[in-house]
Image (cartoon, rainbow, N blue to C red; front, side, top):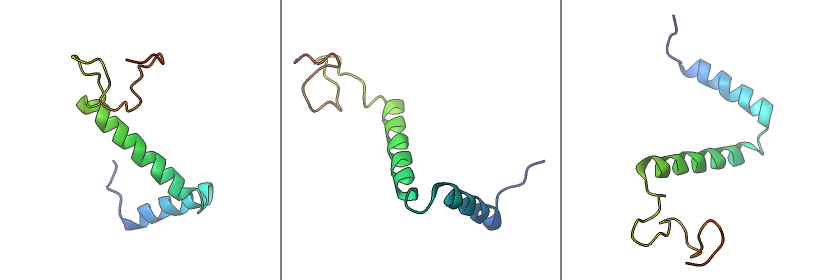
Length: 71
């Protein structure tokens, strides 16, 4: 029923995206998409979870908990 996408189909999709968002917004969209994928991978691997011994998130550099209090 569905066949794989080839080069012409991908170019058509890229052209439509370029027309909808414009050339100036494409780098911003790519950057946001990359950050979202990176955060998803961190969450899936458990890297962003709190350390059970210290209670501080591994990705937290402020030294504050989510409620804003110092640890």
